[in-house]
Image 1 (cartoon, helix red, strand yellow):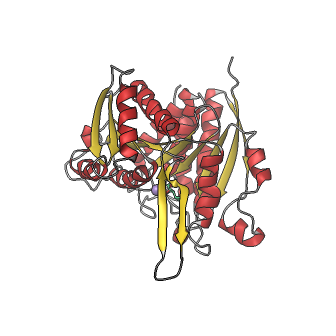
Image 2 (tube, rainbow, N blue to C red):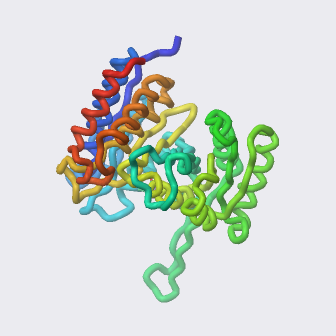
Image 3 (cartoon, rainbow, N blue to C red):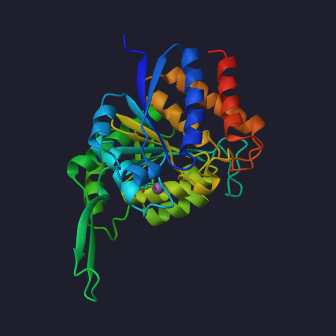
Length: 358
Ligand code: IPM
Ligand code: MN
């Protein structure tokens, strides 16, 4: 029988990260007690504060230690006193690459009672998933400067796309779409009219893999058009697969139509290894310590973590409770407008888990 013990590496990180992670852990404890599995947590002090005081970003010893855990639960990375890019690349991207988390999974679901800026659209219309490639493309860091700082300066940033990297992402998306079993429709998001090398590879791979999935309908849209349809007809989407950069951009748009950064959760997945779960919003420095930030994005990230660890029942309990609290309790999902503090929202969700019948 599969082990029902899971060891979680916790990286609370910067800003409001620690506050929301605390609520996620509270909710995880409630789910574990209800569904009879065990969780242990090891906390790693990484982020801007740690960097400023120790000059260390992500030591090898920490990577080795995290390698012994089953999953990573992350709050937020980003500090106003640290130059942009250092922590993002040094911690977040480094973890994604080191553990080969080649899928960035971002469910986009508008729950009942949550405000969407889209007129005349409701929960039935906004329910899709973006599968973003997470280790290649423009994020690979390939490129460089020539004659930097001179009038003849050249900056090159290359998008790296390997057949292996593209194919494993596309295969994951087809499998996910089949398992999700909604419309059974997978949309490739690209830019075949301009990025004629990168998306030639993506499109050929997509069409080849599609032959093995005759039950899945396939579709294609350019990234700019996807932005348009996501606002005009979000109900057209079931699962979208795309590269790293486009995935980054379209999922911020998607997060807004599902209610904003207080709600949006994501997972960095290595199907055979250690995955990492995070709210997709940032560290929100101006709200730090104020207990006003919405912990639901972090709590939903914990839900995806349980799903990935094989704790389906626990994951379902969390989602049901999130749905209830959003529908019946919280006034507004935005920071400071919930009608409850960060920890009270965690309490409400944990309580509802405890009192549900499994
Ligand atoms: C995200 C974030 C990161 C990304 C940043 C912080 C490096 O925006 O997870 O979407 O671009 O992937
Ligand atoms: Mn992003």
